Length: 331
Image 1 (cartoon, rainbow, N blue to C red):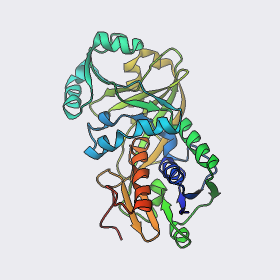
Image 2 (cartoon, helix red, strand yellow):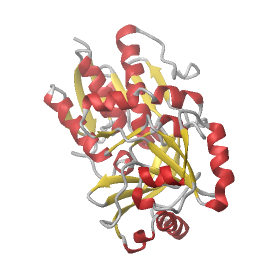
Image 3 (tube, rainbow, N blue to C red):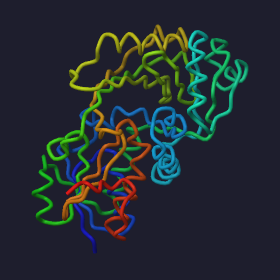
Image 4 (cartoon, one colour):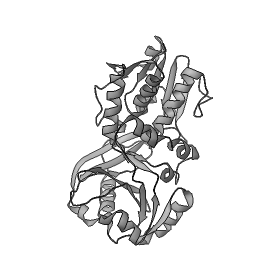
């Protein structure tokens, strides 16, 4: 039986663990923490399974590989909601909506009446939008908890350890899925700061993620149910502090208010700041050095691309199939 140790129990590590178990492997999962929480980048994810929307700024593989995600997560958890994505803009930003449409596929244009039929609580504030009907979203924290429970129930062992991948690789096959923590081994990995809020606003009901196009920062609002919403997210390059900036807080709250003034009375339940792991082209990488495999660089596409990344890692291990995202220049 193939045996593998996975270091990192975020979305990448858990997806790799699930894929390995599905192929009959013996799996050990190693992480610094005993459970998921705000220490993990995955904890603060929006959870949008929206490959076509991401195509506005992402490379083609993100769209193509991301199309695998919804079926995968639906098969492994019950955290998925297939309600589509809605993209809108204020009247003054209509050129941004036109540009978004030119850069994406998989949508139909909707007018003000159609928008209010899709989301009555948006009222008549928007006259044009784009509806990506095939897209979906999930509850990230529930998905992580269910995936972790399933891999443990199916025989994966868990070890709490601040692990050095090189040391584990001396003992056997090891997959490094530590996200930005792997900067110590992957020197071209960078962190892109993201800032987001969790709001409680029982007076507003939304069914699907809403993207509000903005001249500086496109923002999204994702319903979590029971009047809870995830509002995000900024992208800040280079070194950045561990706390939210005043500008980000103002822009995020202003965007929510533009969607529905009732958000002006919302309670800020949580403020999240994290560093998304990214390579220079914002695409993930799989690198192999003997018994050590690095799987990293999911950037802002963690839940969207982790299933495809896991599939490629497992195909490499079991079938010696060179992954599409293999870094041929790595040692």
